[in-house]
Every structure is written in structure tokens, then in C-alpha cells.
Amino acid sequence: MREQCKAKGAEFREALTEMSAGKKATLERKLGEAILELNVPVNDLMLQWDKSKDGSLSPIEFKQAVRVSLHLKVSNDEIDELFRSFDNDGGGTLSLDEFRPAIKRLHAFCSIERERTIYTQARADSLDNELLFLETCIVAAAKWGDLTQRLAGHKEGSITEVVVGTSFNEKLSQGSTPQELAQKIGGTDGWLSREEFVKSFVLMKNTGELRIEGSSRELKNRFEATFDMLQGTAQAEKAKQAHTVAPGSQQDAKLNVRLAIDHLQKLAVSHEEEETWLRGEEASLMEAAKALQVKYAEMAAVSEQTYELYTAREKQAAKGSKLPQFPESR
Image (cartoon, rainbow, N blue to C red; front, side, top):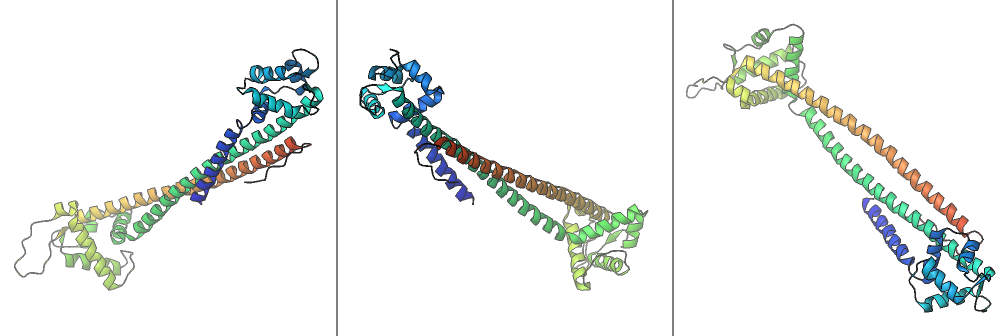
């Protein structure tokens, strides 16, 4: 659709260039455009150009009008040829009866061309706006896709840590203290090995103190991953104690329970804040999408009105003349 819009816009721009060149293609067209700019009734033109006041225009008076009054730079041959085309009876002068229909015909033709140019310009501008609209939609769609992906990833990623941290925050808000939480989790001297960490959290899940879904195997793997994550963070690194493990021992490095709880709480808060921001972005994009729909409807309405106005005025301008109607196109 974007490429079609570009192609159509280029087509209208090319048509505008051709129309602009057409204004200077022939003396007849130049004369019609100049008279259209003057916006003077035919009888008044005749009075202005008839310097001898004999009721007709001689070839000399016509040349003076073309060059002096209309400021057109053309050759004598061109002027003489146009004069002869207006002189229906071949009498060598232009009477008002000859002058009036010739000028009206030129006026009608150039009026139609002017309306056609206005319409073509409006359509070209409309297509430019439509292209801009489409580009905006593409950007918005990409942003929406990225946001959707981030929301999905946000929902799935770090879910165990967030659930645990949220649970701790709820307990604190209900009156529990950090010391009580640490005691509930257990550990030797406030420290937990990997195995103790997993057992403690599985127990909390089984007693209903930790609301998290999954099979025993799944939860074991997830709690182990949480323990490993905490070990890898800067906060957990500071919480580590240099326990020297005896050769051959399977005991893991330990975590400080209080600091682990604190880190999980912060993760939950950060996760909630990020989700709030993402939801806000989602709402903003929805509003932007609605605004784009309204804008597109307005653009379509203006384009339709422009076309209807063009066709109505074109028919009005051509009414009573023998000029063919221009083909209707959008």
C-alpha cells in the first residue's frame, strides 16, 4: 500500500509538471491564462484594447494588447495566426461578436484547466499526507509489536523471583518483619546453601505461604535457578561469605538470607514498576491508534470533498461550451 501511494503521488506530481508546461505551450493558452488572471469582463477588455474606439480590434491593436496589456512575449507570426483564427469573417478586424465567443472559449478552457490543476495538487498533497500517515502507522505497528513482545517476555521472565518477592512484600505490608521472614526461611546463622534454599521455598509453597504454580520437579528447577541468579548478582556477591568447602564436599556456596530477601523484594517492585510503565505505553499507543483512525477518516473526507468540488466546478465551467469533459479520475 505504501508503494502504491508513492507511485500514485509521483503520477500526480508528473501531471502537475505537465499542466505547468501546458500553460506556456501555445499563444492561445498563454492568452487564456493571462485573461483569467486579469479577471475582467469581455466587454471591458474590448473597450480597453480598442484604442481607436471604432468598436473593433485591428491587428496592431491586438498585438499591443497581447504585448503591453498582457505582457506576453511572442512573435508577430504567432499573434497574426491567433488573430486570423478569431477573425471568422476574414474582414481583417475583430468585432465584438467575434471577440466575445473567442475569449469566452479561452476563459472556459483555462478555467477547467485551473480547476483540474487545483484538484491534482490537492490529490498530490492528499497522497503525501496519506503516505506520511502510512509511515506513522508502520512506526506505530513496529512499536506495538515491540511492546507486545516486551509485555510477553515481562510476564514470563523472572516469574519465580517476582512471585517470591511479591509474596515477601505482601507479608511485610501485613505486619511481618524482615527478621521474621528470615527466620521462616531458616538457614544456618542466616545463610542458606543451594539445597537448603530449595527445600525452604518448597516447604513454603506446600504450606500455602508461597503462591506459585508448578510440579515439584518444575519448582525445584526454578528455585535452583533463582538461587543461581541471586549468586550472580552484585548484591548476592556482597552477601557471600568465604566458606571454604572441604575437598569432595557437595555443599554449595551460601547466600545471606536477609540480603537475598531484600533483593527479591526489590526485583518484585522493579518488575511492577516496569509493568506499570509498559501498560502506560500500551494505553498511549491505543490512544494514538484511535487518533490515527480519526485522522485517516478526516483525510478521506477531505479528499472526497475535493473531488466532488472539482467535478462540480468543472462541469459548471464547461456548461454551454463544446469542450469535452475531462475524464473523472481519483
